[in-house]
Length: 93
Image (spheres, rainbow, N blue to C red):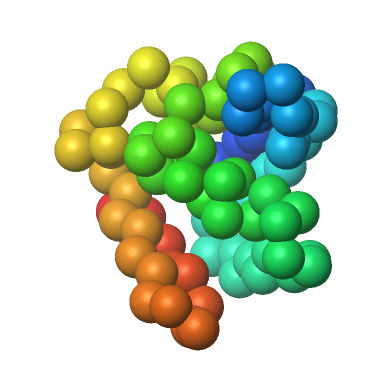
C-alpha cells in the first residue's frame, strides 16, 4: 500500500523534558489509525506536529514522500480538529 504520511525519528522537547523520542510511523492510503495511550504520552503532540501546529525538535514529517516539516499548517493538505473529551480527527485531501 502507498504511504501517505511518514514520521521518521521524530522527537519533541519542551524545555528540558523530552516528550517524543524517536517516533517512526507509516500511515498508508485508506488506513484507519488510532493512537492510544495514557494522558501525557505524546498522542496530541504527535498529531499537532503532523498538522503543523507544533514543530518537532528533530526528525521528518513526510506527506506523499515530501518533507513538510517546515511548511506552515495553513499550507498543508491536512485538517486536524479536536474537541475536548472526544477523538481527534484528521482529514487528508
